Length: 115
Image 1 (cartoon, rainbow, N blue to C red):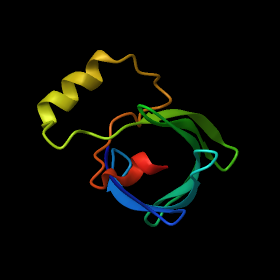
Image 2: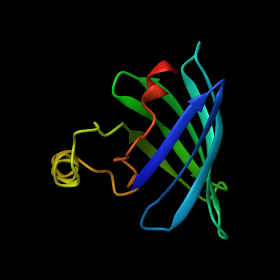
Image 3: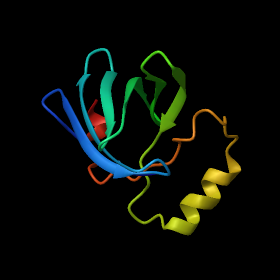
Image 4: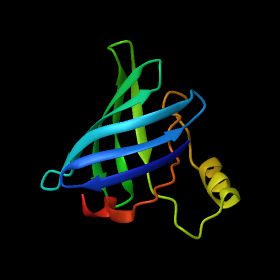
């Protein structure tokens, strides 16, 4: 997955694409509780609701599609100097839950650390 996220004044926004298609992100975060809530909207198709918590290695939590399907996720920023090949080999080394395919992202705005 390729994902760009921005965090400002309690609001999350972003966009990206994955094997399902292009999407936009709209949501909120709370710096005190470190909680995030957002909706990933695949343009012209469906929404995925996310609830996550910031921790030292990114954001982890659960996702749900209209009470139909659900799973877990963990996203973390790719370092600016980290190339595609390095990121892919790092992702391959991690165990992957077949339900939670969204484990590697590109974050262009490093302010997520202020969650």
